[in-house]
Length: 289
Image: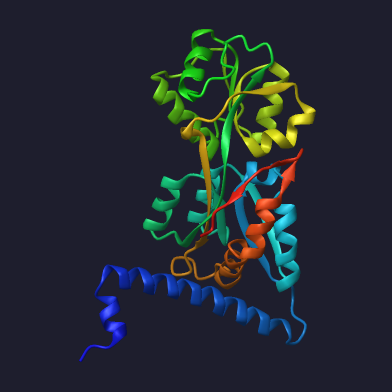
């Protein structure tokens, strides 16, 4: 006679239920084990390596949500702020313990190739096209981001790209594909830098650029660029968090990585994310269902 557990394993619904319960149990065990460790003898403060995007760090959000976790578990989170492409490389090399990025297809491939485990949705915001207030390419008010890029290219108006294989750069390239244009020429400038630096270069050159809304709001009072194109569904920008696979990298700090994922997706931290504002505007919408 089959047990309920065996029946559950034989159905798709059972597999999903079992997977979710297993993940929840892993996070709970990680938190409990770390809580027990804190009451023992004094030990060196553990360090956790988190690779994330420059846009996430530029927004200031991490300075709000990481300190409570560090205090709770007496651990130091070392943040490595790089482009999404570089974050994936650090994860694939086992140089970090977890990654927080915004490139969904690449995230799923990272897990499918056994570099990462337990990917969780975390939050989302959106991308916007910013540029000079005189808007020489006449993009203001457009809802189609690819059409905005088409007009920029037709007018050979200066455009600054991150050019760094980041999530923002990947999104920009997909929009150029949608516009059926391969950008090239003196008007198209690749900064090879993070989001904050790229916005500042665009401001100096009075050029257009694609940025996440959070970073734009962070730099809004330091630049003379304005939002010209927004609201296109293609500009949706979801973030995920993934632990590096302990099977592939036994030295990875998997227990603390899972504890941090548990914190980031907890109701308390999700509330903090949803309430975080710059210039009176909420930067991210939590979605760790």
